Length: 274
Image 1: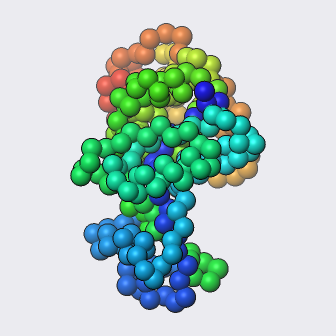
Image 2 (image 1 turned 180 degrees about the vertical axis):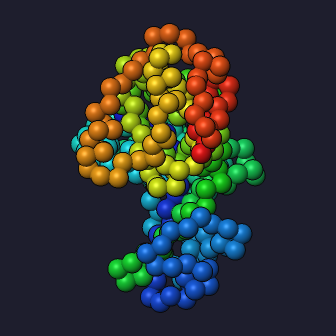
Image 3 (image 1 turned 180 degrees about the horizontal axis):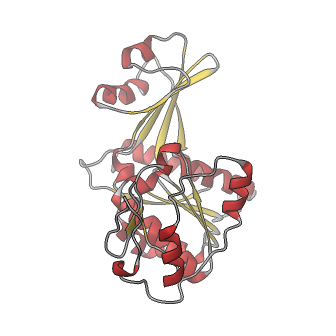
């Protein structure tokens, strides 16, 4: 079974090289930029797979990319790396699975019902030495935490020594709940759980988390100023050197927590809002 398991938002990268900026102008794309797809971008993905373009298909999404690299670093050891995410029941989903498994990654996708959520895609338009990215998330944001309970995924979670997620799944309920469950399990089973902050905005949006610690640790954490992310090398070293605590007592009720001015808490989970 897998040694390293990733969970994230899987996207099928559809990459094309263009000879001019007409395609970018048509869809309002800028070189050296990345954006989320809106309604005006929806025809782009089917246009990229039609003549005169000859697209390359790559298994993408931040976490899946990292898992592909981990599999490669392992020397393509069979079953070394596996990935959990959500895709649609469509041609793009089939192509995504094919691309990931061609790189040796074990795919543990939750497939959304046909005709509901299409597979997430990312248009990659390359012009000269620059590129423009346009991500259409759809099914990628539809992961259910219950997918972790399916026999194949549960077995992969149990066997994994390292569990890795990016910050992006925290922006949707199923992804956030899945990450929290994996973090709690990793603490209990003494596995390594790694999280990539992924993007500056993810350090700023409100995130609900299970507070893992005993009562005095939670009281101390609640009294500290809100930290977003490290701004210097020294701060990065300080953060990575922080002692890890595994819960030894039941989670306290919300009334135990002291509430700094301007912060709110929700039952059993904590939401930091300034």
